[in-house]
Image 1 (cartoon, rainbow, N blue to C red):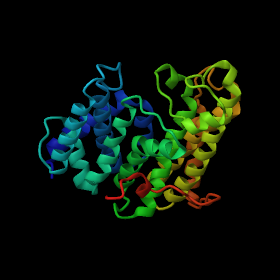
Image 2 (tube, one colour):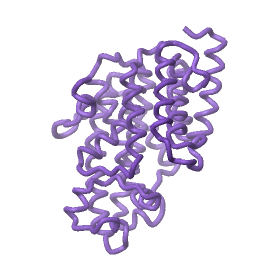
Image 3 (cartoon, rainbow, N blue to C red):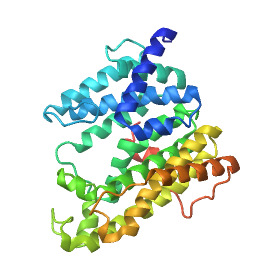
Image 4 (tube, rainbow, N blue to C red):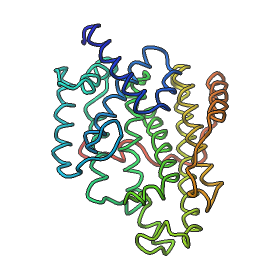
Length: 317
């Protein structure tokens, strides 16, 4: 157990990290009670530092030399293992993980699921199928949602509720993919399944060209349909959370769902400028989420939820 003085230092470091690294997440964390808020900051600090080490950058800034990724991943895994053993790591972000893991019951497997996602952007990785795309979404967002659920008080053994937390992360990332198709292409990345592009008869590397905007809009709508499915499942899982955490989750689900729906509504114009949710609209979603959290009666999604955490892990685990 970290002594109170050291814990306070780590919380202060984590708070500064989230304020610099993500104003949106920093603002959203204010919906939590003070204990959950501090733990969310501690977890964020680890996630941010892992991302920075993997991409050889500082607080999400300019990418550095992308060679020797395996060495950087090994470094992340080594410090993460030390954190779970309760040993000093020499890095406050990893020490922060050690504190929140001990307090909440986070497991090494949960952390490894997040770390495994960093390797997927290496070596020009591309999803061939929808299943590949969903696996990517799990490792870069769903797995973080699982850890956040535990931070919010979900029992690490409550698989069904953790699956619903994963749904929220999947919805987030699918919205990001829909919004950022052209931006990702400019960076040499594509997260649309190759199978989808083949079905649309799109030539390799040509999916963002003007003559394919109709097809791109159709694929974006397909992504948003998945967003809405997982968003609805996440709202059901939120019923089991304490009120303030439930409020935060419902607000986040509505805001990210709105991003996807705006992309769908804009159709072929969706990538002429960045799609975003203005502050006044975020505030409105926050009010609606507050009312939903107070009533705490969400409609179950239509259709069966087909993805769970176990589907994204090796069968041996």
